[in-house]
Image 1 (cartoon, rainbow, N blue to C red):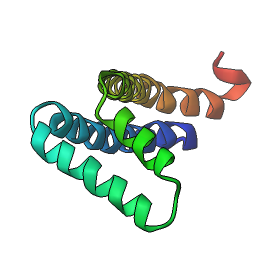
Image 2 (cartoon, one colour):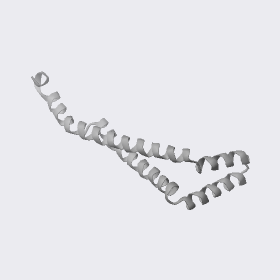
Image 3 (tube, rainbow, N blue to C red):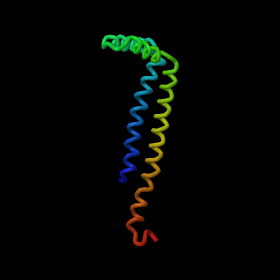
Amino acid sequence: MNNSVEAFRNWFWVSLVMFLFYSWLLYFKVRKRAVWLRYTAAESSFWSRLGLPRRFADSARRFGESQASTVCLWIIVLLFALLMALNAGAYLHYKSRAPVKALLALAPHGGV
């Protein structure tokens, strides 16, 4: 099989894994709000114990709890879904064309 066709297949699987991961994060952020808030509090205290400025830990926590981060997660999930669909479509499109090009290359006079 053509190397670029295999690349479309590989990128499809990478996109699927990233789509599932960010969907899982979005599920916890939206549906399991108490778990998400406990996580952000634990993350903030972790950064504080490492010696990072409290201002950094608090700003990261505020962003993690904001609606802007929810919108960013939605955008990331949708982009990975789009990338996954485009890779699947490109794989199916070029997979069906690859054997024809190989046969035409083997034919004398370029297939004419």
